[in-house]
Amino acid sequence: MSTFSATPNNTSLLNHHNSLFYFPSCLPSLSNIQGSHPKTAPVAFNGVRLQHKRVNVQKTVPGVLNSRFLQMGSEESSSSRHFLVKSTGAESAGGSSVSQSVLGILHLIVSVGIILAMDKFLKQAFVAASIKFPSALFGMFCIFSILIILDSTVPAVATSLMNFFEPALLFIQRWLPLFYVPSLVVLPLSVKSIPAASGIKICFIIVGGWLASLAVAGYTAIAVRRMVKTEMTDAEPMGKPSPFSAVEVWSWSGILLISFVSALLYPTALGTSARTCLPFLLASTVLGYIVGSGLPSDVKKVFHPIICCALSAELAALAFGYFSKSGLDSVLGSYLTKVSSNPGAGDVLMGFLGSVILSFAFSMFKQRKLVKRHAAEIFTSVILSTIFSLYSTALVGRLVGLEPGLTVSILPRCITVALALSIVSLFEGTNPSLTAAVVVVTGLVGANFVQATLDKLKFRDPIARGIATASSAHGLGTAALSAKEPEALPFCAIAYALNGIFGSLLCSIPAVRQSLLAVVG
Image 1 (cartoon, rainbow, N blue to C red):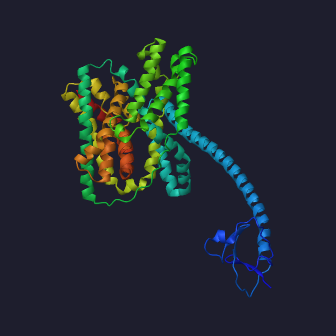
Image 2: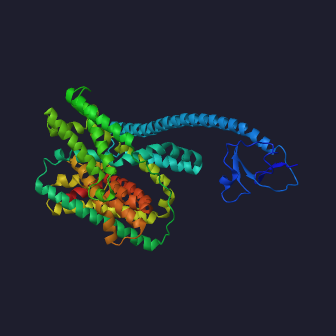
Image 3: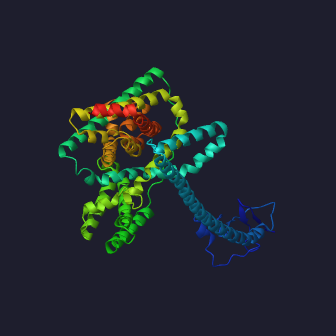
């Protein structure tokens, strides 16, 4: 008797008249399915490949096909159950993702809030105690000391603190150029009282001083490197902030449009004109920075995001001044009021400058091994370049006949804005707005030309390139170089912080201030 055998690899039908299953005549003929081979024809039946072949089989496996057929139902049920489980998992994953996003936002708000509150508390305490030393710098030293002590006693706590403040540090890093912008936006007001001849002299000092400071810092680093012969090691990886999203662009665009129209219709809706103009001026500044950051790299070489940012705010102020008939100067006056009870958009942005100084403590702690290993190169270069920058500016200002008040205002041209403003506050008769503008312009010069200049001077060493960049063009130069040379970023970050720290410490000494004033004349 013919029997039927079905296996996963070879299923045979010996005699379809006597087989366990009958194939209806509506199925295509086996010869048509197989083609020119009449003896073997694969047929798909319930997911099993059957072959019609006349062979003699000694062993049979009865009921295998039946069991296979029965399993199809269980597979369908299993598939349904799997789909339900997968759907439930997707829903729970979606809910988990939302909760994680909410927790992440809360974490960011709390960490940034703590740093801002600390900065505000220190400012108030120093003002009450009539201490002229930069309060944020003192806070930075305190944070750094605490982290070092915890790292030597309870390392896990130091690590936890670093992890807790990581969102705040990334936030500061992401928006850092914005905190420099207000001084550029109100530049038309700052330079009104400055004669054109003095302006040309200041530009000469900015460009020539940047190049000289870069050369001094770079050559010093190379000379010390040759003496100590310390080999480079990998630095601690530094986190990168997230790119800007379309949601951010549309959100800020909506704020700009709505608040602009509202301010036109109700000029004092928020109490004062400065507060009412704050939302759309802030939104225009942020949008300019986002758009500028998304420009092609070739365009950004000549049109830096911070320039795009400042122009965007200027255009918004110009448009509002035109439609409200209040004029550009009036709107720019509302942009940066320097009055804590009546802040403008620029006051809000510059309010983060203290937090930038406090964040230096975390970056220095993260790179503490690198600082220790290359202490000779870093500290020697930073100290010499800072001293050179301050005294050479004073001397050149005197030689070109620049007014003493203007010369003192631009002394800290190579120091980050937050600390540069603290330094000029130690002197009398200065123009802080000019100080901030000169610092930003110096950074822009460095951001655009630093890499080509370093190549021309044949600075190949990442340590020399990083220190020279940060010592001459602070944060903006650092951002420009590190985007293309990540190996120089740690040295940029360290020198960027130490340059401002040492400059502030130096100018806080009365004898140093007197000597600078003597050079200025």
